[in-house]
Image (cartoon, rainbow, N blue to C red; front, side, top):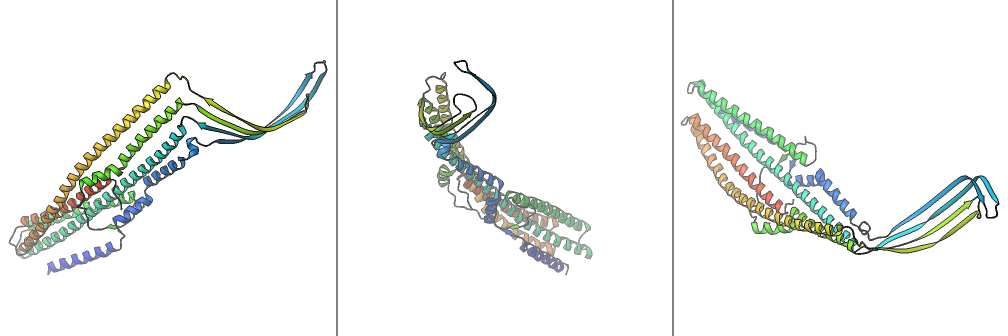
Length: 437
């Protein structure tokens, strides 16, 4: 009768937990990634930086377009003035006023600068590509963070369910031990051992709940939303078991953001050398403008003058000697190009090494999933047999506890094996630049 009551209470608690879970938001991994892409602060900053690079990409910023300016100047003066002419006549006036005004439009245009302006434009274009690569890296990194944290929650949730199950079993064991003690078939020691084991399981469950709650807060932080937002995650982990190393390496060579950035940096270094070499050519600029001038004077030979008209001209300059700075600058730029090529080779080697290592770990984790899945089935069967024997009193409490712990440990290891395999999958796709929704 006592066992029936215990089972009924456990069922009521179980259904209550189900109803409570159903009231929570079910957050899928797809939804979590979408929220992160919309809200995450680092992604927003990277996107804004890319917008700056796009705004900088213009022919005007590269120096290809002319500069046009409108000017106006108005000067006034009040002076005590005295003028002596050639014939000795003296003209004097106190508080003599004079005024001049000058306004017009002017155009300056550098029409040739040793092809530097074209190198500038190409460099701005490459910097925009670099911004796109940085944004892509930020997005992939955040998607990886969301996936890692999300599936960590899934494993913690699975382990919580396993701990709930073992507590139900421990409560049944305690009730059975108390019944036996009441009718004189068991000692007080058996009851105390059952109570201690039940308390141990409760402590483990509390610690697991604390870890689960903190991990939920961490995911909310990545999603840039209220840390107290409540939700539940799906209860299964699906691992892509079809990844192939050659395909991953081919993808990484084409679209890994870090490798892309190194290649772009190499191109920027080459354009920097072009910009420096432009100083060996002459610079030719043209200018033109239209100006109007008017002046008034209270004293002098003329009381008013005015002029207006067009002016134009050109200017050319060539650097003949600058203390060998040109040679030095070109040499330094060439060294920077060499360094950027070395960085590409280094990044390629590091990427291939990381991919190969991660893929080996991925294969190992896939094998562990198969092994641990069998272990769970065996441990469950062993626990069922042990529980039946324990009810009829043919095994000791130590044997029962061992079977119980073997089952919960097998469940935890199986959940962890799935999680580790998922982490390997995420890491491989991240390095290949192929981690998406």
